[in-house]
Length: 275
Image 1 (cartoon, rainbow, N blue to C red):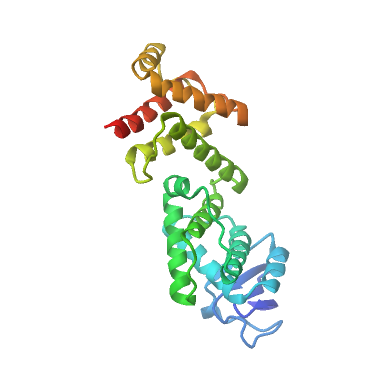
Image 2: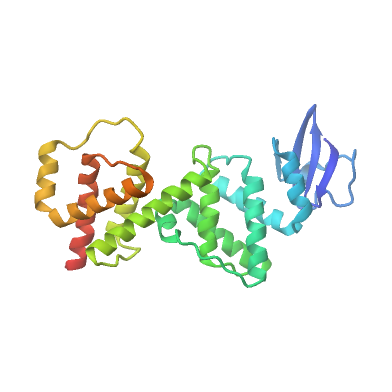
């Protein structure tokens, strides 16, 4: 494979047959120039990108080590999750990490308000985020805040082949956080993030929001719903408050049977608090 363009010491564009690809590897381009042959053993990753030009622009304005860090995290994530990530991750995560590391050097920390929800909804991705922070600390002696593990998790999740897009993921996670705040305010309680009932509620809300626009048959009959309303009246009132805010703030209409399930989850939290 011949080099058609050197991006930096660790990334080059090569011609593989008739196709242009990006070859990544530590020191792969050291002392190399256009038309030189790439040493195959130095190639750690070889991929085709539709966004070659954007990647080139990014690599021209960030430190090389930031790109190396990002690629290391991406490789670990793909191995850990057992799946390939969307190619845009090479731009999105690199750009995000570089900016985050610049902020850290300037002593600017951004609080991740969705961190608790991210830990539960995207557990594996969050674990990758923690691994990334540890890798950065051990290799480059930079201590990044835990909030950053949450941001990395969101990037990893949205770049999974069926992960969705970042905007929708953030909106959904924000809605879930607001629902939890509504529940805590209504019941005058403060839940613990390691509480299993809290985890079950968060997980259910995620799937409930995903199901809203899908045609699904009711999974709770009217008799059961009536019983829940009467037996757990306070928790049902709380669920109704949640439904009201979702409708008012996001134009999301929760079906009656979904309110029944949310009521059960709220009741578990309420019982643990009063006990």
